[in-house]
Image: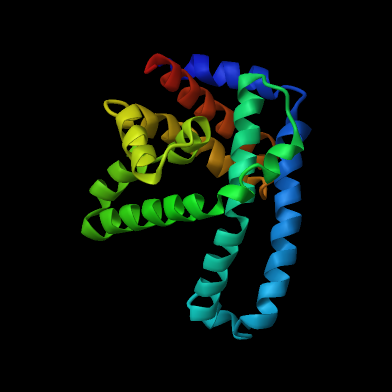
Length: 210
């Protein structure tokens, strides 16, 4: 798949549509902040900045926050798939997966455990596994199969394409560095650009494998 063609198509999709991309993310950030503020009342964090990142309470809080907001994140993923595919956009997508929270938790834990074990064994196998499962959540959104079937379908989709995906992701490194140098301001444009390019790649790969 031609990277430049993908990127040019992505630029065309996001042109004058940045607000449409960011709208569900801003809603997510607001909701997650409220949830985190509530959780902190029950899981207090250390006041010493030096121990903050290594606090067991911080790990527990982040895990619970990830679980509670997982259906919302999946809704954003669906919204962005519709954004890339030119479908009608609706913020109702954000509540589409709350009824499926249990299979989503299973999928989340499975991906987390598998990729973590891969990283523990060796960095390279971990990266390969991560690439194989990179689009697993989107595969679930499209097909809504069981956990094992979703993982298998994601791995099958990426068979022979993991290096191609790695190069595509790595091609944004210069932009990412520039984003840091602009104190994150560039990410207002860069995040939609990267996400749209990668979802275009997924969409075209999915269609080619039907």
